Image (tube, rainbow, N blue to C red; front, side, top):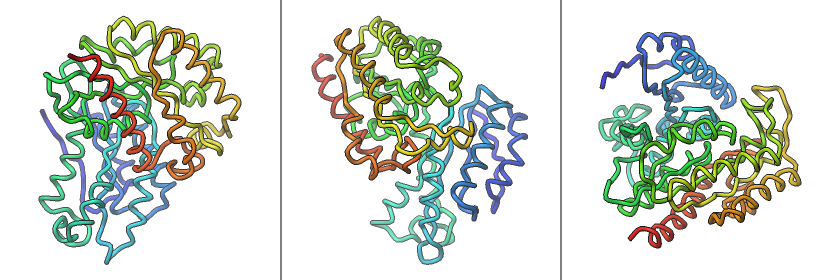
Length: 357
């Protein structure tokens, strides 16, 4: 592996945006973008700048994967930590293909419950020491262990364990690391490379995502992208077309011989969705009746093909206000992602106990 570090101390995301065009010179397979500690702009502006940076990199290096790293917590006696937490949440709102998030902020904050800040910092303000750098490396490394078949595992797999594939969009990308942790020693959990997006993307990408592996269990979802559209906003994504495409995907998944579990689509947000508003200048609110049409369409497919259902929608809907990042965002806070991960892991654990002898 060849690594090239273009970072410069003290720089902000706006500087990174100016530098983004130089990335293509390295012909990268993986690009790590880590900003925030020096940024003194609003979370909204920070997100816009990072998103623009990602778009430049993807335009110049379309085959590269991108990791967005949220920063460490700075010394609470020197600076207000709420700023970093807001920047972390702003990063998690960026939902683009082949982009994943390395959340350093949350475990760093957790460590501070048991350690002094000086145990993690080299200057006792905003620089990590060797231990802190190791935490950064661990978070990034456990998210991306590329396998020979092109899949992405959150940790080095144990080939003797049942193989579980999680297929879906950024919601599943968000909870997969914790699912992996909860099933460590019990299953090899892998999320396919990138974001599954809508069913139309699924039809073109599913063979690549499945690869040549023999999966014991596949936990899958499509739905939010079909509702909102995003980059596919001009495509026909009606509930009827969604149902038809979803059934085609189920038929392909059944050919694997794996145990299949359908994860119901997590709730739409109650206010105009932020990405549609910001990138497409469109105020999109998914009405409850329309959302129910998509949920019902998926359920008909699963009942027809006798696919087990893991109802994540029902799990988080009653406390959506508590667990959603914002009323205009479909993504979840760390606690929300952990809540989803717990039910996903428990469901998978029960089923691998039945199907893998």
